[in-house]
Length: 119
Image 1 (cartoon, helix red, strand yellow):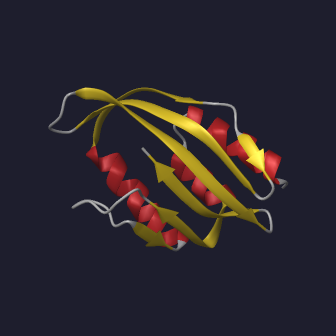
Image 2: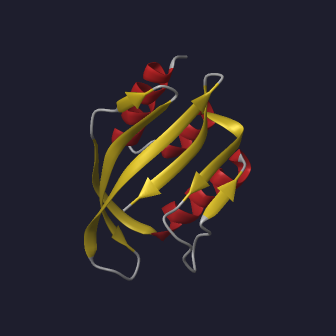
Image 3: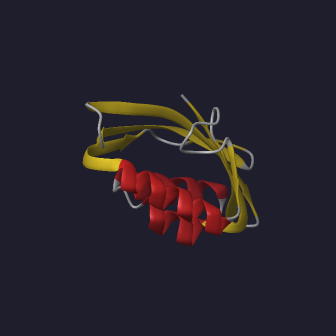
């Protein structure tokens, strides 16, 4: 797949809150995920598809309810792309709120090799 195809496919997966399926199809085995900073729940950097899947499961377990996710049109530059993702969620033990982040991805050999989030 081209960078454009991967960007479009990932955006569609995210709009439908199918993050697990997106990882299975679009991510390289050695992909890296980078958060803005470390938290008690998540390290700043997660390496490898297996660890990314665990991170996804952990986040999903923290979500009490989902009320929708929006994703902007991807912006593509060379082997990278980004989009704005906003999730309307109620996290366990917290009030309902929106999480907005700029998501930046790097592609190599038809797979996502890196993702980085900015909030």
